[in-house]
Image 1 (cartoon, rainbow over the protein chains, first blue to last red):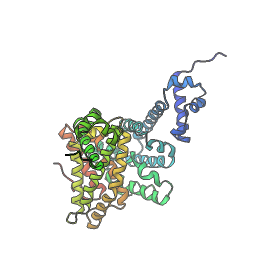
Image 2: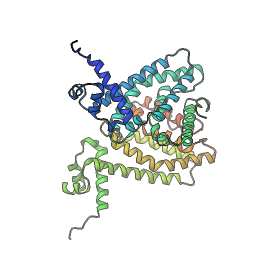
Image 3: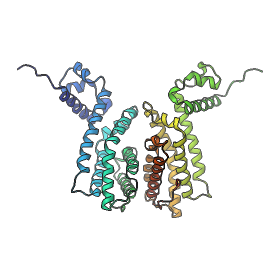
Image 4: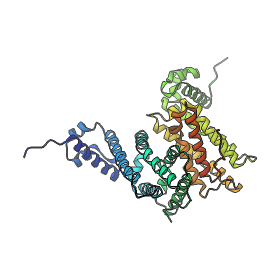
Length: 205
Length: 205
């Protein structure tokens, strides 16, 4: 039973998975490189061979997350049986639930000292997702449910709201009433921007 | 004619003014601390007495800008003779013109490596301005021109769009046609969010 050489790409995926789990569970600042190496089951030397720093690994985690989100969005955007309204409802509800459940990630992303990494993540995400989101808006225009004159510009503006949601709802996570009000305000805003009835995105009660 | 001791607060204002002029004219990265000291007419030692680094001075410049904007907004929000619609039109057109004229500042603020400073600036600005902006929305609701159910949350969401405008219009500054389209999309979005006719904010032609 000789030791089999690990495919570097597989190893990278192991690092990304381990780091992501640890970052989410404990928060970026509290995770050490040793912990990540232990979880992958390699020496610290092997860690440094792949990633020069925790920050570099964090970037890989974020790039991986951009790709995963894009794959999901690609499948959703091209789902032939779904209306644009259904697609947009799904996205809105996923976004809202991410903000309510992924505390550790959100606290990291918006925490002081991480703004440059997070800015990179935001720009990568936009580049990956805007064209697919624009397709959904155009579909809604064709179906007659949305009324958006400038789909690309409007989608970008709307995305700015979603990217910054944490600043409005992050601190309200523990107060159900305030949280519900903020969500309702968001649903109304989204509906108005897309030129559709205010209750089109009513997800909360 | 003995040398008169300079009031430290006056000196600080001189540093802020000199730094702001230089940052705007040449861009933050290209300005040296020596240049700033020369412009104020003090030794480098005196500079360090007031500010430990160029970054610290930059923060002072941004804090000063937050205060100036707030003073302006206070006067506008309380201007008894203006309707809320007029006030909001003024703000929209000021924002748009800032993005078209203050290239150096914008390129600094959104450039890589400055995201943490800029995030601080954004949070300071919001804290200073949101209550005043909310007053304007409430005025519009009373006057019957705006129809905004959750003024505070909605204003925050709308502010996210304005805070990130650079990413959409920064690169379009040199193409008048694309720029005008992006502005029109912004005017429509603002009008829809405030529950007012789409042409209420038509500033461009």
